[in-house]
Length: 172
Image (cartoon, rainbow, N blue to C red; front, side):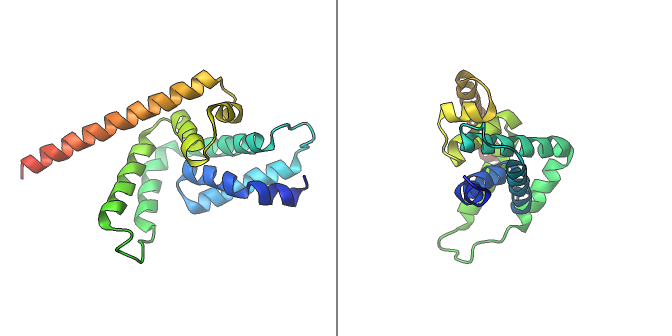
């Protein structure tokens, strides 16, 4: 597979992973570019599973940047959410849907990096547990436990937010 075919075949999947990891279009584009530069400059003759290999590079690149930014993450995400353009069709994208999306992103950001990575690969890139295992180079059992842990964390955080909202409404 030549460089152009590699890019055309996997650009959307790599970008999607980068976008969900970085939560920012321009960062995702930068990460995607880094991934393909590394992939093009590397000898791929020994790579058996190109997709898993590319997604591993993407996850490592994103994780590196996120680790370096750990302290500034909240400010960056907040600015990103405020700067996103609102839908031009209020019927299709109501206030409630936007609010739900923002709340989900807040919960999603609270997940530990390793759990968030597995969630992104599973639910955004639609990889199977064995594929995720190959991408992040951990046993399948670890992938399953991270998925399970993430679901429990999201459920607990969502439930506590609902209780908080109900408590606030009752004091009005």
